[in-house]
Image (cartoon, rainbow, N blue to C red; front, top):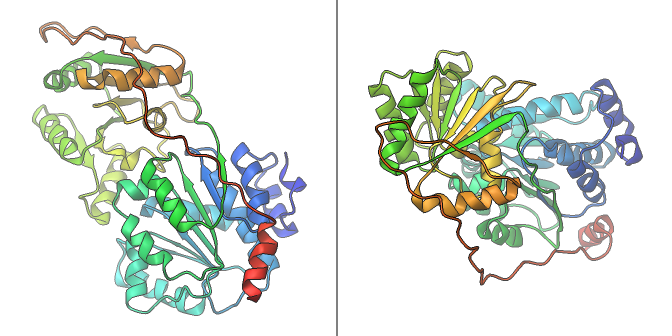
Length: 415
């Protein structure tokens, strides 16, 4: 399906033509018509599927066509990190090239006082679209710089990362400031129980659109070591001795473990740095700048880096521990083999993680090569096939919308 087959307005279509966008991705094809029709939408799709355009294009088209107040914030887009907020803002500049009457401002932490004043002026003048991180937006709201009472669109992007980073309470506070008839859109790469609970609280009778997680690119060479936790750092040391490894990300699910790995690697004189939620925004920016510039060879990180960060030359990803599910695994190893490059993904499987990794292999449709431990590290746990655990949880049914979303919302506005 092409963009021209939708009823996106001509200004949006002209921008897409200039950017050589023609065919829609599956998430765009299913979301854009529903958002244009005024429905609340719950989208489940991984990074790289085109979900930013899936919500930005219809919202910008509606804002350009519609009769929205000039002195109000008409759309809020919530992003978990400054980096993603900047990416959304850059994307919007392209899509909105011909939209003379639609303005935007990006609001995020880690800036000087001049930036804060600029944000404040933009909000008070009524920027149509506000792209913001939760903490910064809540800060503006508390001091009276922001009025959400006439907001028409609210987008919560990467909701699962919001949960991981502890922003859910902030989101709930912000949502209470929205008018009842505000159209609400929520995207998440995964759908754990807490995210579904949030969707129930946030959205009004939404359409649920789920795009299956893609398998990793075939050009990623995947392998794994079955090992005990005490052997993992020695394996890393062995891997690094085998070649001059640079452009490496080591992932761990816990920030305390990230700190320990980084400390131990520095003791081995490995040029590394760490990235986790305990760092200030300014420190995160410095870490990412050094890594992108090649000043750091190895980045040890929590899943805060697994999504939303575009670095094209990562050669190797090491999963220090097995991710929680196949979707997280795909996101992690998807940091390598980008922009037509080859890449390698290595996973350490402890005894407690064997069943979890077998579930990932089931999703992949193949067994990942198991590499023998280096000499001198002793025995490894046996990689025994385990029976699938029976679940007592009930499957959630799909939400269906009743009637036409746009007409339903207009009726509520008249009331």
